Image 1 (cartoon, helix red, strand yellow):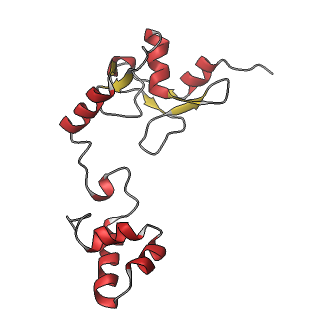
Image 2 (image 1 turned 90 degrees about the vertical axis):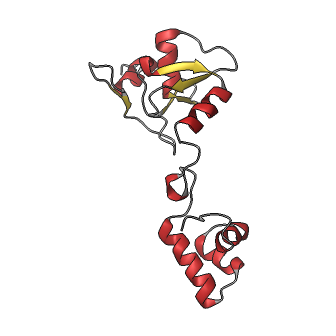
Length: 155
């Protein structure tokens, strides 16, 4: 049985294009869409970081590999750059990725329909916040913020 190298396994999971478009990671991804792959020690490595290293060498300590294309699954080295965490956050704000509301936020656990149901049940059926929290699998404080218009205020 011939074992593939890490680099061979990596490239099997990349859909490249001949143009300068994004090279889409086809392997497993984390919730935000960033690709990842296990290395020879079975530790997960971020695909865009591996791509950077294959084309450019080691990533300097304390620096990040940032996407210029705003596509987390892209591993095209021409779309990647080295930068700081602060630069990444500033870019995210400038590009509108940090202020997404509701289910457009990748960390949202609820949907618009669920929030509407929570508000309706709280208002019309006098259910406690604790009971609603249990029903929807979230904390009572999250329910409180919803019914008191501190979160999901756009609904």
